[in-house]
Length: 508
Image (tube, helix red, strand yellow):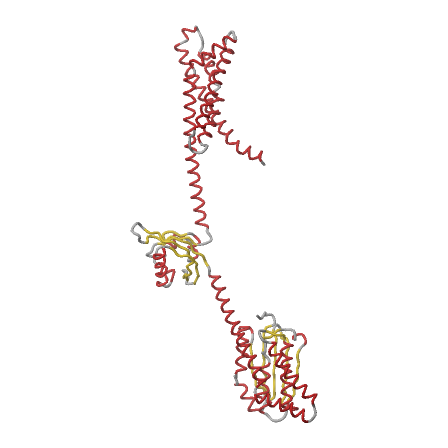
C-alpha cells in the first residue's frame, strides 16, 4: 500500500520533469545555434578556419547539461515555492543550494566537454577549461538559475490559479447537480409572491412539468400555492419578525387542485435598509406523515370510543345482574330453596351468581374475547334467568366447533340475549325458545340470536332500537367499518338478531 502511494505521488514529479526537459532541449538547441552564429562571425578569424556546425556542436555540448539541470531545478523550485504559500529562510537556502549545485555541475561538464573535444585532451586542458568557466560562466549560470526560479514561481502561481478555477468550476457543477437533483424543494421567492428560482423537485411538486413553466405561471404564491392569503401573510410576518422559520407546516394547493402538506425551513434576505428582499429555503413533502398522523389519531379516537362502549357494556351487564328486582328474585329463589331444604341447589345459584360477577370483572380491559368465552357468559346469564322462569325458558345452541376460537368484540352477544329475555319471555305467556347459532359463511362469521315473541310484539321488535341494539351497531361500525352488519328481522312469531363480521380482520 505504501509503495503504491509513493508511486502515485512521484508520478506528477516525473511528468513535469519530462515536460520541462523537452522544452529545455529545444531551448538549448536554439540557444547553442544563436551563440554558435555569434562565435562563427566574430571569433572565427581569430581561431582559424572552422565550420559553423563545429561551433554549434561545441556550444550545444557545453550547454546540454542544462537539459538535466533546468527541469530538475524547475520541479524542485516549484515544490519549494508551493510548500506552504510563503517564502521562508529555509526555502531561500534551498534555492541557493540548488543554484550552487547547478553551477558546479555545469563547470565540471564544461571541463569534460572541453577535454573531450580538444585535439589533445589532457588534464591541463580540463583544468584550464574549468577555471575559465568559473571566472566567466558564473554570471550566465546565475542568470539562468534566476530565470528558472522566476519561471517556477510563475508556474506555481499559474497552476494554483488554474487549480482554484477548476475547483470553483467543480464546486459550481456539484452545487448545480445538487440543486437540480435534490429530493426536496429548493426555492427563492420575493415577498410579493413570485418565484425567482426553484429546482425541478419544487416545480414538479407544484404540479408543473418544468421550472420555467412554474416561474412564469405563478404570479401570486399566496393565492395560487397557499390557497389562503392569510396563511401566507402569517408566514411573511414570521420571516419579518424572526428572520427565519423552521419546520413551518402548511397546506399547499397544487396546479391540479390536489392538496399537499409541506414542512418548510427558510430565511429572509434583507437589504441595507432592513427591508425583506427575498425569501429562500427548502420544502419537504410530509403529506404521508400528516395522513399517517391523522389516521393514528382517528384510530386512537376509535379505540377510545370502543373502550368507552366496552365499559358501558360491562357496566350495563353488571347493572343487569344487580338490578333490585333481578337480585331480589334470585335471593328469593335462594331463600325458597333453603326453606325447602334444597341447600345444594341454593349453593349452585350462589355459585353461579358469583361466577357471573367474576366473568364480568375478567372482561375489564379486553376488547375482544373468543366466541367460546362469550357464549359461556351468555349461558351463565341464562342459567340464572332459568331459576326465575323455570320451565318457561328453553335455550338451544348450534355453534360450529371451528368458530369457537374466533375472536369477537367483548359482550357483543349478551345484549342480544338480554333483549330476547326482555322482549320475548317477559312479554309472553307459555314457553319461550331462545336459540344461538354461529357459523362461518365464506370469510364472514355469522351469529344469530332468535327468540319467540307474540305476533304484535314481533312487529314492534322490527322497529326497536334500544340502547343494546344501538350499542351493538355502533361497536360493529367502529371495529369493522363497513365490513360488518347487523339485522333485526321479525319472522312471524319469532325475532332473529343476525350479526355478520369478518374473520380475517385483526381487532385491537
